[in-house]
Image 1 (cartoon, rainbow, N blue to C red):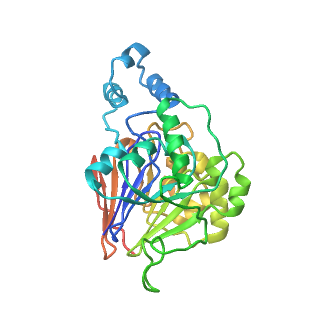
Image 2 (image 1 turned 45 degrees about the vertical axis):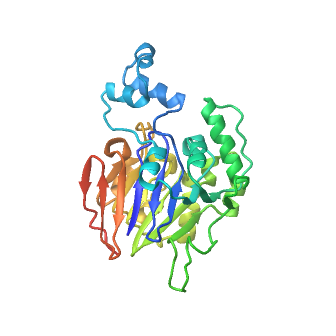
Image 3 (image 1 turned 120 degrees about the vertical axis):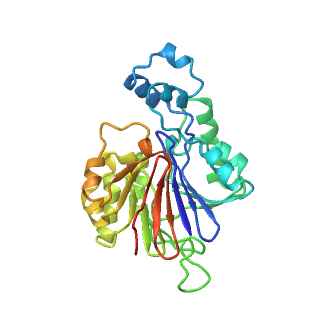
Length: 320
């Protein structure tokens, strides 16, 4: 059985995969109990909470609840500790080097053994931080990606294959069923300072069910993916790129993927929200962690499955 947890971490990303092999993959992390100052300011303005009111709350969660936003945010460390205490994280994937995808990585590294880190090759340097914890997280990320902690560093790209993620013990064994759709060497060369153009895009396959995880890939990345795969992109579940923004929407790719469900991980609906565009090509609709809370996809060995939303339960009727 495969389980994919799309956590409600506010403005950020964290996906946790329980593979049938027993291995655990964590893709990105964001401490759901904290928001960056820009997002916090947006929320204060949106819900008309002034600074003096905000000061009396002990957490962003309390602030949002008082403002009428009752969906509880999830701290990934608490989630992982409750479910996998005493286990190691086999694979941590840093889709790209943006802080809203790595807040909490220092605590993750302290509390869990991380066997492998997938990281794109880049020279990005951050020297200005919103808070001290961001500085700690960036330093922890640098230690992990340099292999100082004993974690195996893997700079993988499209076309790379290897045991455990896409190969097993026999020719028919696809391991954990992970395929890398992006980046490519050319995409990394062209990315410049645009971290989103470096982003991993992954396809996960189990029992004939395909899930595409878009990271923060922007339109240029999807153009490249579409040019390479074209109509070999059909999937059952799509995790929208860049929190469902227009910048990560590429119509030909989404049309080719034609998912049953599109999932959006977002804290506040962005002004450039593309949910309605995704909805045109998502037969069963678009689900947002903003309103559904944590969303868990379960796929059984026979290809049947369901989507369990924290605040609602749906049957995917997904089948190969």
